[in-house]
Structures are given as C-alpha cells and as structure tokens.
Length: 210
Length: 210
DNA sequence: TTTTGTGATATGCTAAACTATATCAAATGA
DNA sequence: TCATTTGATATAGTTTAGCATATCACAAAA
Image (cartoon, rainbow over all chains, first blue to last red; front, side, top):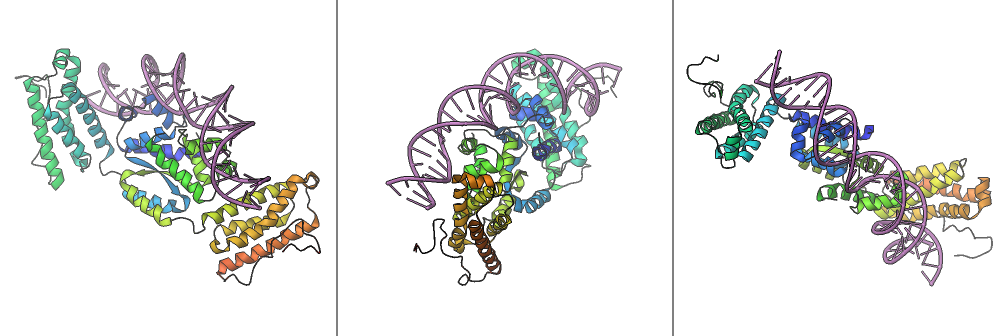
C-alpha cells in the first residue's frame, strides 16, 4: 500500500476505534471477514472501491472526491464536526451490549423487553453517558448473564423462551434504562435514579456473595 | 458496479470531461490504459483504492472520508468552489496543444521557445480565455504543423533540430502568446493585440493564399 | 469527403482482492 | 488467575482488477 491510500485507511481504522468497535464487530456489521479487515488496516491489501464504501458506511462515513482547491475548507468543516461526546470505553460497552441484545433477539424473537432495551442502549450512544458508564454496566449485567445462560442451556435456547424470573430481571433493567435515558435527556443529576445492585444468576437466599 | 460506487465514478468522469481531457489524455497522464479507463467509467470494473487515488489526483481531486453528519456542509463547500471559468472547448484546445508541445520538447529538447509556449498555454488555463478561443487556435496552428512535419520528416526529427524558418514561426507565436497573456491578466480588450493570420507550411513568396 | 480522435469492446495473461476457516500470542476483562 | 476478546497471520481456493495490444464504429475536425 502506498502513502496515498494510507490516509484513507488510517481514517477508516481510527473511526472504527473511536466508535468503540472491534474488527470482529465491524466484520459482523459488513460481512467482510475480520482477517481481511486486519489485512486492510495493516496496509496489506489494496482494497476495492465497493469494499471501501461498504466499510465506510458501516462507520457512518461517506467517500467524497474533493477538488484539491477546496480541501482546506473541507478539512475545516470535518474538523468542526468533531468526535463523539461519548467516550470510547462507554461506546465499547454499549456496542457489546447491543451485540448481545441482537443475539438474544434472534434466540427469543417474541420478547419485547429486548427491543425496549435495544432502543435504550442505542439512545445512550447519542447521550452524554460519560459519567454514567458504571450505571450502564450495571444495566448490561443481566443481559449478558442471560446470554450466557442461553449459550450453555440448550433446553432454554431450544424452547425459545426464558424462565419467568429472568424475564423479570430484564424488565427491571428496561425500566432502569428508561429512567436513565429520561435523566440524561433532561440532564438531571444522577443521584436519585440508580439501577439496583449487581445482578447474579447464582444468587440464592441466605448466601453471602459480597 | 453498485450504486454506491456510481457516485464516485461519475464524479471522476464528469471532472475529466469538465477539464477537457479525453480518456487517452488521462491515460497519458497516469499510465492507466485508455481501455481500462473506459471500463472503469462504464462501471465494468470495481477499481482499487490506489488506482482511484491516482486518477483523482491527475484531475486535481482528493479522496476524503467524510462523517455522514458533515456531508451537507462539505457538499456546500465543494459546490461553492464551482467549475473552472474556462469553457470546456477552450480547455480541450489548450490540452491538445500542451500535449503537442510536450511531444515537440521530447523531439527538440534544446528549443527554449517551446518551453515559453508551454508556459503561456498553461497560464491560459487559469485565465478567462473564453472569448479568445480563436486567438488561441491561431497560436496553436504553427505548433501543430511543426508536429506534423516532425512526424512525417524523419530527417528533421532525427537531427533533433528544426529549420530556421520554422523556429522563426514558433518565436513569433511565442511573442503573440505572451502578449495575449499580458492582455488577459490585465483584462485589456482584445482589439489591438492579435496574432498574425493563419500560418501555413506550404506558403511561399508570391503565392496568394488569402 | 477524408482524416483524426474518441469511447467501447475483445483476447489473453498475471497478480491480487476476497473468502472461509483456523490458530496464535497478547491484551483485556472478570 | 483464569476466561474471553483482540488483531495478526496462515492456507487454499475463487474471482476479478489491471495490463498489453488491437480493433471497431462513430463523432469531430479539417
């Protein structure tokens, strides 16, 4: 790869990272194999135009041919848009949880609470959740635990239906997520609306788990 | 080729045409075969990134990844730069003559008058020669005739030197070109500075050619 | 009318993008 | 500390870009 393509490829990679996406996550969104994405980003492939556009669009980027004369002004415009207000670690958490929710919706198509949670987590990406990362992580826990349960318990996955108790936890998380959304939208200080303490699947009455 | 790449390829083609360049002329500038340029522009090839950048740069374009959010503003900036003030027919004439001058310079490396003419014709591209297209065509005639002479007369080409008479015509054209440049720079009305009537190689004393 | 230039298409060949799949070492998360 | 995720690399196969070269029909120029 030449220096000429380097700028474009670097822009692609840095945007992927800024959005908190791994190569595997981008692969899942575009169908381009992770190994090929790695090769592209490392400069080991002279990517085709259609592939470049596909990867760019998955990152909310558009390819544009700009008259050289207009390049400084265009760069200024692009710079003024600036990066996302949401910090990368928060974006990573959100992306992971959204991917998990997507898989759960595949396993349990009729669970509307999953759609509610998905909508909330998508909304979080456009809200300034920087300080609320811990809260988001708490919300994500029951989601991830249920995914683990689904993966390890073929009976549940096969029946495409969760035990009532798990659904209850998800509904509770959905309520907390909605409350957090409302708070972030109105920029209400976060001291009165918190999700419950850490959720654990193996938790039972009387046990002391700390 | 998909619709996605269509926009980029159309932009490339329309810019080439707006600059008054043929596919062969672009091929000469980049080394990409004319037949391949045709295939690319017709949508029959999914061009590689390095090739796209090479063709774009030959057309004074830069490739840019733009956040979708900034696209409207970027499009406005690009639009405000606008097209060249020089009309396409004039650009075509200029390009053809510049290509001819390039070949002549290869054949006669020591003729400084060719460099002077080249500089003038390059300058014309950035001046508003719209109304002076005829004048430019007149200037181009001796250049083209000499190219024909060079192609058909191996002795002259082999000796890498022109007969004194032809050099005289070129020098005259260079003087006229310089005068035209000065006039265009200062936007002086073109009624007092005109190149001489049409130049003809077969013209000899006493003949009446009109 | 003739000459020249143009974009499109063809053939045949080589190199490389792209894909599927697997695996590794290192980093990160729990 | 262990489990999970990550980016990089490998192999093997398929598809296609890119190139060289030639030629065509049509348009434009002279």
